[in-house]
Length: 178
Image 1 (tube, helix red, strand yellow):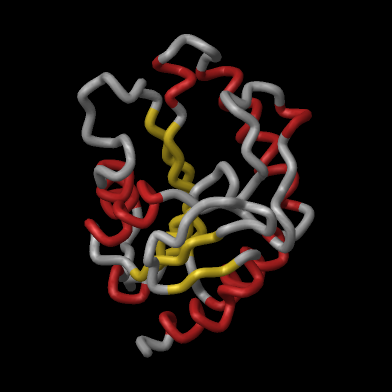
Image 2 (image 1 turned 30 degrees about the vertical axis):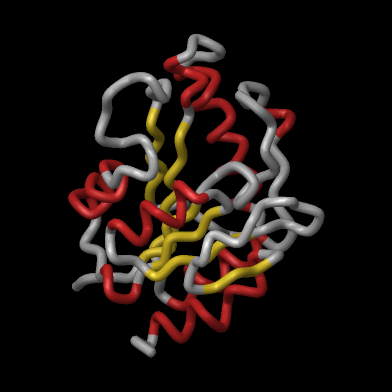
């Protein structure tokens, strides 16, 4: 049976952005992230993180440090009873040719290969133009998170929110195929 997915960006969406984050102690969830993902997972969505991590390709940190950060993320989410169904990252620097760096769709393609995903009811949630473009390029519904105090422009996603809880009704409508 195919299931819908919430594809969610990591930095400034699921957790606060720390440039080239390699220290697990600096992982902090954005407001309402845990509660929102718990609600959406219970509604039937797969929860899949999609993130560019060029710090590896640039030599700023290694895969072990990234894994420690992601372990901390999983630990924080577990207190809300959220288990990630997938976590995909692009380790390449922007100058490297790859198919996985957002806005290209390689990470989404891999997630679809690994999971039976109903794309018609799935959503890409992120804060950047690359997130929204990738979602559009793959035919997903899109939600742009512009955290309070952010000066990011509106990237014309299907839905614009200032916190993850604000997207729940939109996501549930997508789940019903509306």
